[in-house]
Image (cartoon, rainbow, N blue to C red):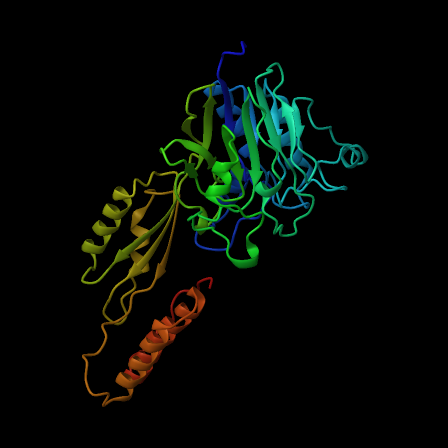
Length: 402
């Protein structure tokens, strides 16, 4: 590889291998649940296979390879074997889940005591809480800078405040695990949950040719004022829950002196989690069934995907929109639903009946509900309370996780 050649990385992070399937609508029944868990733990093999196919020179993994120190030895062994099979260097900057403190799985003494294989020689783990800079093997013109979390504790200091300057005359790559303050994904942290926070201005002022980011679970690219990509989160490669819907990616990043980074998306998961919504007002029977199929078609749902449909709008008392999901057959691998529909509201009046006063009070509380759980409890209370006050048969909803 000549010094004039570009250097190409596959960037991936936030695998969280070993994590349990999350509660919620996207947990399928067995045996599909076991299959999905194996797919989550297979992220390292998928990343290495994608790296080979994309023709990259190295892997960049900015943290959270596993979910917790309770990681099973078999899952860790699969990861180490996958790294060892890659014909190139692997750079890891441990995050707040796969932290690199003493006694953890990055500690060679721990692996030796457990009788496990060591970390492969082609893997470089940044082990210090301070940023360190290393050269790319076989390249005098490429440097990588990174650091490690040493515990799962929230880190409040700003990482770019203690960052070394890029090395002049080299392509400089930075690996940072932390919270981007302008991140807008559904998993964005708030308040004290933000760890190692930084701003767009701090990132761009650092002057690195590329910043590989980890911690957030959705693809997010940071561009400079000219629209040139300078940093990105690849996002988690396997959708695990409602906050990881949509396509999952690895990133192929090519760098060359004097040229902008060439960033390409590489599919990382053969399934997609879809969170969809359907207003069922006026729909019933064949009309509801065809609307459901059209909804899935418009969303690009494949037979491998997981789907959750939330039904909204107004339906007659006793209608059960969820029953229509049974007609989808093999349209998706797993389909679940939430019924948020309700009977039509009574016409506006002067609050002459108990039902009208009850509805007005509950709607007022709904408008000021502080969170989704409170909102859902009030919605259920409104529906069941109206039925009771009107003398209608009480039809409790299907059990749901709140």
